[in-house]
Length: 177
Image 1 (tube, rainbow, N blue to C red):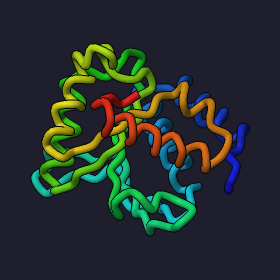
Image 2 (cartoon, rainbow, N blue to C red):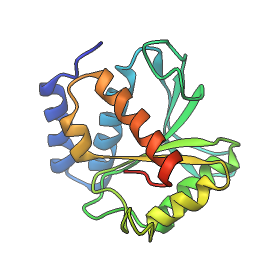
Image 3 (cartoon, one colour):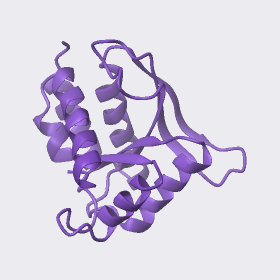
Image 4 (spheres, rainbow, N blue to C red):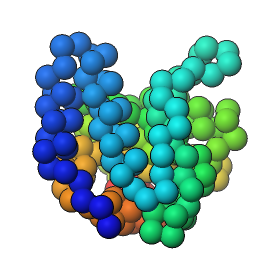
């Protein structure tokens, strides 16, 4: 079990909040995501900010998952991560766009790290929650991790547990939170 450094997390949060431009704050949020995942056993950052062959879709972070027994052994080898350091929840349009990125690459799982979560109500499955539920019917699973959840993490085991819980909630109730 690895611990997340509170100092490192706070430094990332500071950069996310106080970067000079939206682009700098977005990059800082991606840096935070990389830190969270590369600390998990068997996970390494493979690619960042890569456009597809048609130059119409950009992937924020792609990780290679070696499926270490004490890591993310229950996830696929390639995991795409979309990062949204927005002051408002991410809309269903943006969630659909991320789902499209997964679909066009033949992937069935992705992680959306959204500073303020997503729009809608999880109990009513409306707005962006509905988008995720609809994609679940197409065998595509997307989980959402918020800044509040990240701030509560102390260890990689807690991150792994959070991902497992979100996958179970998604499977059982069609919910992501």
